[in-house]
Structure formats: C-alpha cells, structure tokens
Length: 624
Image (cartoon, rainbow, N blue to C red; front, side, top):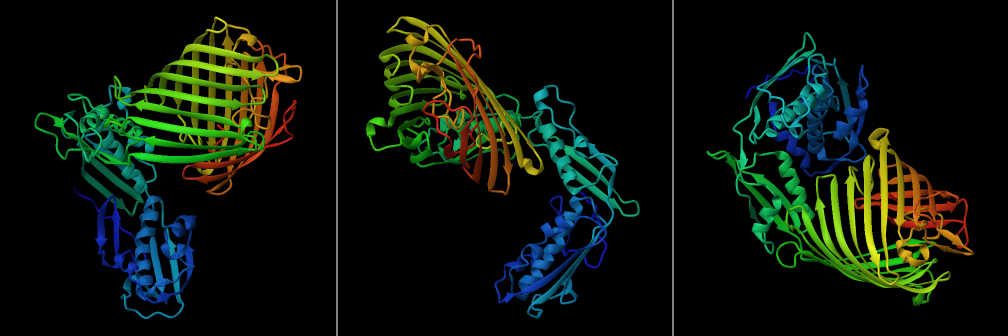
C-alpha cells in the first residue's frame, strides 16, 4: 500500500498526524503526555484564524480552546495538549480540503512543538494560536481501479463515489476520500465479495496547482457463500436456535444486508446484552465463509413500573414482571397490571387491568412469532363502564425492515353499563388482521419518515346474533428542516368504520370515540361521540387529524404547538352532519435517552358536557 504525504507549510507542523488511518510523519510519545497529572497550569488563549471563515471549525477541533476555562495538568500537560492540537486542527483543515495551510501554537512566545515537557511556564501561561487555512484544493484526479460492475439486483446497488464528491473538480476533502473507499468496498461486498478491501491508496497533493490526485485500487477477493452459522457465549439460550434465528441459509451468496437483518432479528429477541455477527478471517477453499454469532445474555427477569397523569384522565399507575427466556428459545412471559383513572378516592371509580402475554419467537420462520394473551379489566369511563375478559392468540410477522403484519383470533365477553341503554352483555369471536409500514427514524421522537397502519376485524356477536366488521386506517408523516432537523412538522390522520349491527346492538368498546391525550387533546377521554340527550355514545365512523410543529430550543428542551380535530358519526360512512371538535394547545418536551418527557396543555374550542376548559397531559414520547 502506498501513499504520498500531503505537505503543510507554515511555522510548525504537527509532530504526529494520521490521515486515512496511516501515520504520515512524526512520533507519538507527546500525545500521551496530556494525561500527566501535575500542578494546575492556568493559561490564557488568543485564537486567530486569518483570511478565512473556518474559525468555528478550528476552535471546535482545539482542546486548548474548548478547555480554556480549566487549568491544564501541569506545564507538561499544557504542552502535550498543544501538540495534540496541531494534529486536531490539521485534520479539520484536511476535512475542508485545505492542504497548504499553516498552524502556529505559541506558549509564552515559543512554538509548542519545540518545548520540552519539563519547561517552566509562568502562571498563567499565554497561548497564541494562529492558523492560516490556505487555499481550497480540488481533485485533479479521482480514480478507482477495479471498481465493482453495476449490480444486477437493485437491492445490491451502492451509491457511486462520484455522487458523494469523489470526482475531478470537486473539493478534495479528506472525508470524501474515506467515503469513496467505503463505497467502493461496499459495492463489491453487496455482490458477494465479503473480503473486498482497498489494496492500494495513492494520494498526492500538487501545491503549485492546488489540486489533489487520488487513486484507489480495490481488491475484491473471492465470492463467498454462507456455511453453517454457529453461536458462542450462550448460557440458557439454545445455541442451535440462536444460529437458526440468524436466518443465514447455507449455500446462499454472502450479502451484508443479510448480516444486518440477522443482527436486528436477534436483537428483537430481547435476551442479549450484547451480540455480534463475526465473519471468519478468510473464505474457505470451497468459497464458504463461516459466520459466528457471539452473544452475552441479559438477566432472565425484569420488573418495570410506570405512570401517566392528566387533569382529565387522572393518575395512572402500572407495573409488569417479565421472564425473557422460559425454555431456551427466548420465550417471553409478561404479567402486567394497571390502575388508572385515579381522580378521587373511591376505588369503584378506578380502571383496572390485569393479564399476561406469552410470546414464542421463531415459529415457522425466524421472522414469525406466536403471541397469546389473556386480560381481565374494568374500565370506568364517562360514556360507559365495562367489566370483561379478552383472550387472543395469533402470529406477528416481520416482512421487511419497514413492513410487518399480524393476524389474531380473539374471544371477548363483557358487561357494559351506561346511561342510555342500561346494562348489556356482549360475547364475540373474531379475527384481527393488521399491516404496518414504518420508515420513521425514531419511533419515540421522529424527525422524518412515515408511519401507516391498516386493520380489519370481522367478528360475530352471539348475544344479539350479529355479524360485524371494523376497519381502521392511520397515517403519520414527519418532516424535519433546519440544522439537525431542529424544527419538525408532524401530521396524523385516522379514519375508521364499523359495518353491521346498529349502535344499540354493538358493544360500546367496538364503537368509535374520540378525545383525550392520544386523540383530540383538551377534551375528556372518549367524550367525543354521538350525542343522545345529555349523554354521549360511540359511533360507527371516525375521522381524526392532528398537526404539530416541534422546535428543539436546546439539545434537551423542546417546544410544541398543536391542533387536533375529531369527528364521530352514527353511520358507517361519515356524513359530517355533526361538527368537528377542535382542540389546540402547546407543549414542553424534555429529551432523554428513552425519548422525550411530554407535558401538553390542550384547550377545547367547542367543549361539550363533561369537557374541561383546559387539560394537562404528562407522558413519555411524542403524542404521535
């Protein structure tokens, strides 16, 4: 491998520097001296960047500047910090295509590169940094030899390096060369050449012409196929099951996308503290590349608690107990309980939920899970009170990274009481099917992407002898703009329809309501429906819409303005004879590693009976 060093003119170059992973000149020993602990050495710093607008980037690269409010670790620590800054700032210049600049760091009037570590310095020491960035260099030649041929399968296509700036006449940023290397290698790997690498890298700067000539030679290596996958590091997990769940079919052509899908699939099992898919160092003589899944398991059991609060819905408390790996195949048993609607002191007015969910991954295919659950609950809501039990069993399947589906059989039995129909009992059997598309960059705090979900639930109700079917569709979109997507416009729309029996012969929880923290903020929970006298009952059609503008004020604090709207109709097809109920408000977000903590205040513009003048909501994650 060959590289021609790029020259840097000026008062003093850095004594040690690496570019493209290769040391170009100098020695390392000073770089470690910054860790020396000695008497505190205060210093003042004057930072000058002449003739250009790179001051912010260079100051950001300088530890002398970023640590200017703290004393260095002795004189030796200050000198070592300065010597490291040569390298840091030189890298910043190279990253901007500046290969003819100069860097001078003077400590007490002397160049830091020439000072021995035991130099005595005044208290405080004076540091002067002067950087002349120099001209911008362009690519004179940007060549990749032995480049991969165009991919036959569009899924194997890789962006060409020229599209990322590796082309004659473009700014010769060091990062562009590194990106070109990565793309050139990835193009071969996507076509089955697992051990593709850069065999030769030739980078030369022509200072008289302000150009850089770069030639990258790729060695693709042999085409590889998968062998039998093995697992290492398992304790309670069945290693054969772990290898099977990776889904790497023996004899299939190597594809890095397969490796990434295998990693995500194994991570979804939620039993590993860490996992790696390790490719063997060499491809075997028969073209087989062994893959090893190296894992470290989590603790078997987990306990969690949580809570929510709004001025309308009241306080909600919940807890769960989770067993991650019952029988060695990542089977999960989750037992959970919840108490909600705590607005007063009478337990009869609270909502209760208790039940268990069992999940068995890897049924039929590595991407298919069997899920069964049984829940008993009591809901005390403004429109009705429900006491019942629900059981369901079925399958979920991950089609792609963005598309998943589910199908469940369910059975329900519940008693309802409301002010319109009195006490009624409903028993039903049905099938629920759903499909989800999700391209959001972050499910808890999306800044770009789309989410869409459609469900269909045909069922038969036995008490009244009615067949019925419920349908819903929901879409969400997120668009971020500004630096680092600090401003995000988000929108949501949901529609639903129930076909079959009349409202009087339908269980209230099968009908549609709107209102509350996840629907139309400002209105009481499930208090937007079909009015009957002074009461509200559910309808057979639903339309909801929300719009938010989210602004990140700092890295941890955000502000939100929102408008929600909801409509519930008595007929399966909405005729919009009733008005849309609109709520508006503002919110505060505190960003954490688990997602934003949300505080919203909503105001109903057309409140009905039982609706407040304002409602507060607290939770984790964005409203949608």
